[in-house]
Image (cartoon, rainbow, N blue to C red; front, side, top):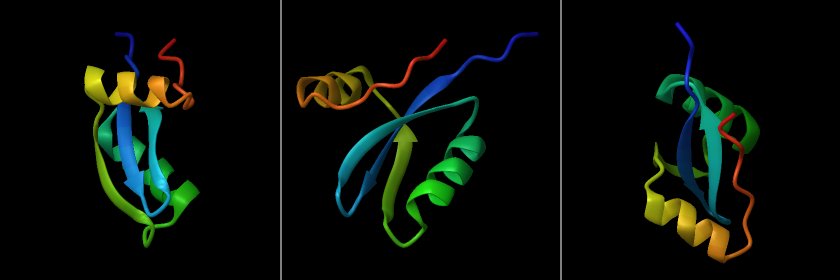
Length: 65
């Protein structure tokens, strides 16, 4: 069984970003480790609109491969 990466969007005091992870637990752990729990306001599965918005702002979009 192959695992599939999923895109997660997170919001901090400084803005929004994307993170690729295999599940929501992994995404939360890695995002909190990188950003700190005090700064993260929201973590959710990214919608196509979330990804399009970040691309339009010249933001980084992680690869899902």
